[in-house]
Each structure stands twice: as structure tokens, then as C-alpha cells.
Length: 160
Image 1 (cartoon, one colour):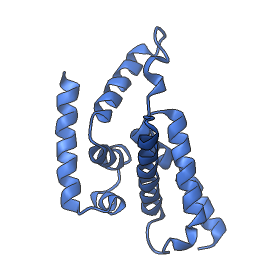
Image 2: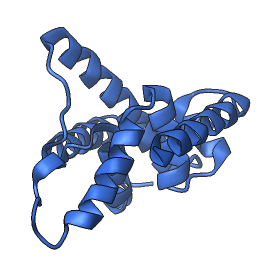
Image 3: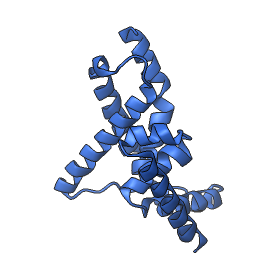
């Protein structure tokens, strides 16, 4: 595959990458930064991608690694991701929908990092279990058990 074709394929993945980033960090600007860093890293290392394998799984794996690197970096600086949207539309027509979305985001944010990643890949992006396990570099059984625990925790958190 030519470099131009890889660039076009990565560009086509941007909505999915952004959705995954938003599920990890929630803050729009941080998500955009995360996508940009992942795309830059993917483009710079496009020669390492093996033709015949899934480019989307490769890019999701890059984003996961960029996210982990960024979290570690921010922990060292004592700065955390924070949702700016928490009060963005108070009092307007979006209030009820926003309240529901915020409750879901809050519940998901209370999950462990491993559970959030599994939820983002399988439940939000609709990625098959095998591919999600490959992206996260874990056995499929581990992915399945994390997903069950994450769903149970979300049900408990959202039922309150």
C-alpha cells in the first residue's frame, strides 16, 4: 500500500479515533490532542504497519499507547483530565439530554482504565471481541471478563 493510500485510510478512521479518544478523556480538547498525537505517531511509523493486517486495530493500539503515555506524563505533572462540559448548557433546551449524557459519562469515568478501554472499543465503537483483545494486547477471555464486570458496574452506577 502506498503512503498516500495509508494516509487516506488513516484519514477515514478519524471519526472512530476521535470517538475512542472522547471515551477515554471526555474533554474535547484533550481528545483532539490525543487523536492528533496518535495520527502523527501512526503516520511517522506507517512503515511499521504490516499490510494484510487491520489498519484500524493498529491505529487504536497506537492511540491506547499514546493515552497511557499521556496519563503517565500528566500524573507526573499532577494534572488530570477534567470534563469541561459539566455545566456547559445549564438552563437551555439541551439540559435533559446533557444531564443523561453526563450521568453516563460520569458512570463510565468511575470505571477503571481497563474497563473504560474495553467499553469504548466493544460497546461504543462496536469492535469485535477478537480485534479489541488484539488492540489491548490481552487474551479474549480477559477482555470478556472485563466487559462483564464493566457492564455490571455501569448498571449499578446508573441504577442509582
